[in-house]
Length: 153
Image 1 (cartoon, one colour):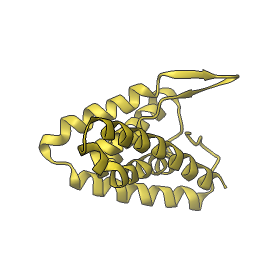
Image 2 (cartoon, one colour):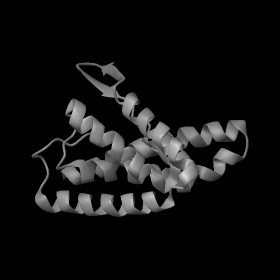
Image 3 (tube, one colour):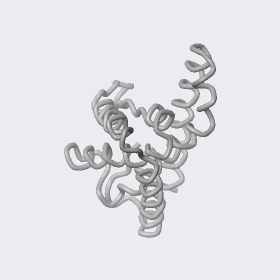
Image 4 (cartoon, helix red, strand yellow):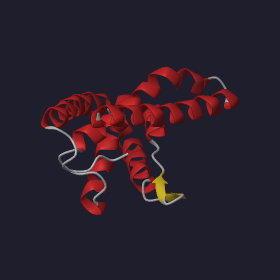
C-alpha cells in the first residue's frame, strides 16, 4: 500500500504532508518518557513485519501491523509508523520520500481511529480483547486501503 514517487499531484502530496505533520506533533506531545521504549519496540515491529512477504498469486503482500500499533499507542502511532516508513523508503525503496506524508497519514490515521473505536474492548477480558484486536487490526488495514485509494483518485 505504498505510493511510489511521481504518482501523486502536488496538492495531494502537500495535504498528506500537512496532515501527517499535525499527527506527528500530536503524537510526539502524547508520548511520555516511560513510553518511549514501547513506541520504539512497536515501531521496529512495524518495520520488521513489512519484510515478511506472503505470496498471493503473481504478486505478494506484506504484514502491516498498523492496527496493533494504533491500538497500543493511540496518537503515538504517528511517530512510530513514520519512523518505520522512513526506514522502508531509505533502505528498501518502499514508497518514497515525497510521498512519505501521504503514506504516513494513510497508515497512522486508521491506526489512531482503531484505538478510539476498539480500545474499550481490550480491557474487558481475554475473548473480548481478542475480538477487539482482530477488529482493530482489520479495520485499520481496510481504512488505510480506502485512504490510499482516495489519494490515488
